Structures are given as C-alpha cells and as structure tokens.
Length: 315
Ligand SMILES: Cc1cc2nc3c(=O)[nH]c(=O)nc-3n(C[C@H](O)[C@H](O)[C@H](O)COP(=O)(O)OP(=O)(O)OC[C@H]3O[C@@H](n4cnc5c(N)ncnc54)[C@H](O)[C@@H]3O)c2cc1C
Image (cartoon, rainbow, N blue to C red; front, side, top):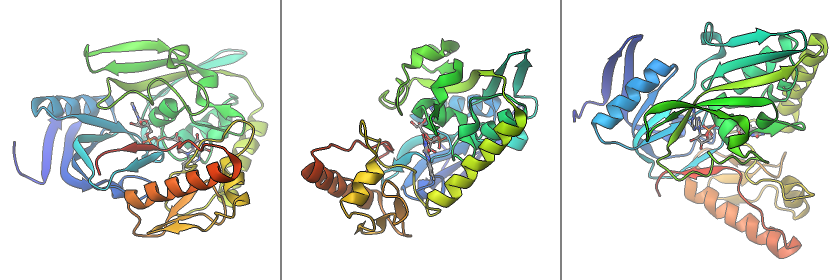
C-alpha cells in the first residue's frame, strides 16, 4: 500500500480523499481520541461504496461513524478505515423523498442527514413527530443506531423502515423499524460487536400531520432550551443513561459531584450528566471519571449508572 498521507480515489462523483493518521479528536464532539489509521468522509452512497472497496482491497477493518457526538474514542485511536457518514442539510437536495398524503407523510432521508435539520425540516412542512430533534447534534445514521430522543420523542417512534448495507452478504436489505428492537437508547445495531456487519444507508419515517406554526415554534423552543440548559463545551451529551424513575444528572448533582475533575475532564457545573473536556482530556481521564462517579452513586444510592456514550477504538 502507498505511504502517501493523502490518497485520492476517483469516483463517479469526483474524488474521494482518504487521509492517513487522522486524530479522531478532530472528528468527535468530545474532542478526544487518538489517530485513525485512515479516515474519509462519505457524504453519498457512491463515496461510501468507493471507501468500502478501497478498505476491502487493503484488507482493512471499517468503522462507520456519523457526527461523532455519542462516542469516546480511545487514546490510541482506531485501526483500519474510519468512514464519517455525514453531510450538510443543504447538500441533501434530490436525496430526500417526501410523499405527502392528506393525513400522513412518508419521508426517506439518507443516513448522512443532520438530525437537527430533520427536526426543523419536518416541522416546517407540517409533519409531526420529529421536532424534538431540533438542536440535537449528530446525523440520522447515528441517531437510528442510538435510538436518540428527547422531550418524550425518540427515533424509533416514527421509524417505519431502515435500509442497510449488509457487509457480509454484500447487499442492501430493508428492515422494518421493529427489527431494531429499539428501546431507551438501545438498538440491536448499537450493541453489535465491531467490526460491524450493518451500515445504515437510509431511514424512512411515517409522520402524522400537524400544525406547521405550532411545530416550528416547538422545534425552535427545543433548540433554544438546549442552548440554555446544556453546556456548550466539548462533550458527548449525557454520559450515563437515566436509571428507571430518576435522572443520572440529578443523582450526580445531589451527590455534590458537579465540578469534579480528573485530568482534563470535568463534570459540568450546568448539567451533572455532561462531562466537559477542558482542553487536553484523554479517554483515560474520562474513563477514570466515569468509574469515580459510578462508585460514588452506587455507594450513596445503591444505583448502578450505565454509560450511554459508546467507547470505541484502542487504548
Ligand atoms: C451537546 C449534546 C447533546 C446531546 N443530547 C442528546 C439528547 O438529548 N438525546 C440523545 O439521544 N442523544 C443526545 N446526544 C448524543 C448524540 O447527539 C445522539 O445520540 C446522536 O443521535 C448520535 O448521532 P451521531 O451521528 O453523532 O452518532 P455517532 O456518535 O457518530 O455514532 C453513534 C453510533 O452509531 C454508529 N453509526 C453512525 N452512523 C452510522 C451508519 N450510517 N451506519 C451504521 N452505524 C452508524 C456509530 O458507529 C456508533 O455506534 C447529545 C450529544 C451532545 C454532544
């Protein structure tokens, strides 16, 4: 294989650029993570297939991520090829299918679509059920895998179908939403060992009609609430899932653990379930802070906090 730092692969759409030794800290919202051996961005299915062909030719394992907003990447990075499946909402023209009926709509969007864009787009068209996503980081692929949600809504609630690329049988398959067995921040895709078999290509939602003005106002209010209630620093959202009947952030606050710091990572003063990278945090710091908080909450309340963020890569 070439030792070039930048590899250019011609595709039907132009050129796909693959970079060697790319720090994952540049590609995750936590700003943490060692180098990916190789990294590329696949904004379209053509680019994705070109990237997969290249990885196969070089016998490299593949890791697909979306916005990188729910991940803790190890300090030694990720072996093989990392494919960032993300694209700006403005680039999705012609790749969004909206079939509108009197009472409901069927919307198909690529995995690369930003989830916040989806929330605003559906609200502006008067289709209800996804306005909770306004202001949420990440893209549709990652949100489907994580069954992301907020304000009582979640991806799975209106997900009719997911189109997946099966890397073992090398074909595209359609799954009904039920096959994800989605529940709170869980799908079967999220807990599949890596390297994974399935890549989300597209998601189809069935949405009931709503009042555009009301939906737009709700989406704006949700996005504004995030700006007010959540810290703005480098983080990966909620570190722990909420235990049944209570909130991880509330327990952490009650235990006086806000502001607790290990190395370069600190429990946010604003929201107890958010850890903030103060500038030079490592994955080892985050892991040590997770353990510290888990032990303290178990000791005080007998409750075991379970991480919501996914750990990937090497240490
Ligand atoms: C400030 C902040 C606030 C947040 N608030 C919330 C919240 O309110 N609710 C909530 O649920 N989450 C929240 N999160 C977490 C996160 O934003 C969501 O879970 C988001 O949907 C993850 O999307 P992503 O594209 O960033 O996924 P990533 O973190 O990139 O990936 C998540 C998982 O999906 C896999 N994946 C990504 N794309 C694909 C694909 N196309 N095919 C196959 N696998 C794929 C990855 O391998 C990984 O396993 C927050 C995060 C931040 C930083």
